[in-house]
Length: 203
Length: 257
Image (cartoon, each protein chain N blue to C red):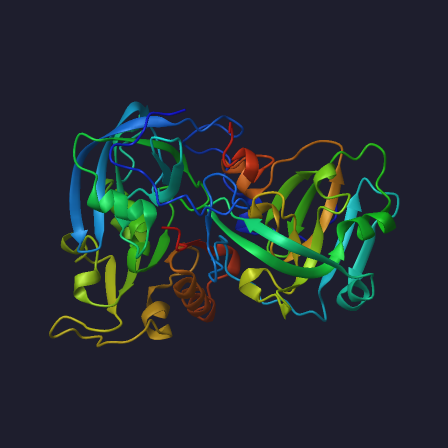
């Protein structure tokens, strides 16, 4: 435990929501926007999502094909490394399990790199995007995701810090090793578990 | 491997930069407050002395952490307004902090902190939003977004390379302009959105294409910093002015307290 800061007692924590991981605060109605590139305007007529790399069946879906897959919903919280959280959100899309079932990962696949239409990348263990833990989402709280929040569709991996939930996601590449993505090369943690406060390398 | 990923700046983020090597821990340091300086009624610069000499790039930030007696912590990221001090780095850094309404950390820093206090910090972080000091750059700031861009302008002036930099800063009124005594200069243009100084040639209004287009030379990297709303407006103007999307790097200041 680090030394205490003179005269700092923190805001009252009597009513602190147990859904908030350590060091996070409730952004309530606010949904901050923090990406590092110009917001792209993507046309759903030309949008695609691809699963490639160490899979038996490299697969690409169009917007319409994606929407014909079985729908899946996430209801719960999201946590950004910059310390805001949003509680009780709802996202609609498809489960990454559905997409991987079609592409059939090879036994050697251990990690994925999620890549976006902007060139953004982020790395995840395969186990963090399977078994109901990850989605490709296009609606948030019942409305189409806006471009600034990653629309038309973003990856959603809500049990990890939100930079893992790549905006404007274009696909997943399965690998047999870990390969740091954009923020991870810039000092952020490779896994990013908010309950462990894995914000930066070495946490 | 074939993929639809375009070769943008994001896909080729700099790997060789100051700060910890990729994968190395970014360690906490206990810094001592040397001085506190008012920039505006709502912004202060905190000059900190670090126990370890640290090298940073202009545009990077530090994370600052407050620790309550019961172990509760609150941490926020703050940009450095001080430029790099040379190849060996420095033990002194400046963090400039805007006071946010209801901001748990910024209000503590503004109301409580005084010289001699100790604060936990770690960094530098954010090598993507950093100027290398030798390529042309256009800097576009909204309000408090000038902080990391000021480090870039100060670096350019210190190294005699002001010719590489053009800075456009948008603020509401003259009283909202940080670093006002340093901003007159051939590199800097100030656009006022609510009230301008008497005799101001531009008049008052939001940033427009006519403000941005004359500053675009072609081939430069553009650093945009401000609120999310400002960043959207500014990047839209830059794209209209012909800047390639891959040349634009954005730091959006979130309302994080």
